Length: 153
Image (cartoon, rainbow, N blue to C red):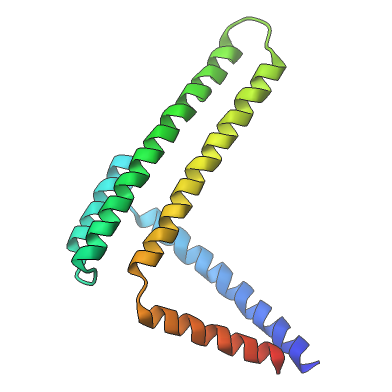
C-alpha cells in the first residue's frame, strides 16, 4: 500500500512539475528571436562558437552534425514544397478533384514531415551524446535510483 501511495505521489508531483515546465518552455519560446531556418542556423553557429564549456572536438563535431542536419532538412523541405504545391494546384485547377490523388499527396506530405521531425529529433539526440558530461550521467543515475527506491518502499 505504501508503494502505491508513493507511486501516486510521484505522478502527482510529476504532473504539477510538467504544467509548470510547460509554461516555462512556452515563455522561453515566446522570448526567442528566431523565426526561420536562417536565424536558427545563425543562432546555432554563434552558440557553438561562443561556448566556453565545449571542447574544440565537440565544437567541430557539432558543426559537422548541424551541417548534415541542414542538408537533410533542405532536401526534405524541397520535397515537401513540391507536394504542397501539387496539392494546391490540384485543388485550384478548376477540374474535377481526384480524391485518390489528393489522398496520396496528403500521405506523402505526412511522410515527408514525419521524416523532417525525425531528422530534427535524431540530431537533438546526437547533440546530447556529444555534449553530455559525466556529472549529468551521474545525476541521472542518482535520480533513477531514488525513484526506484521510492517505488519499492
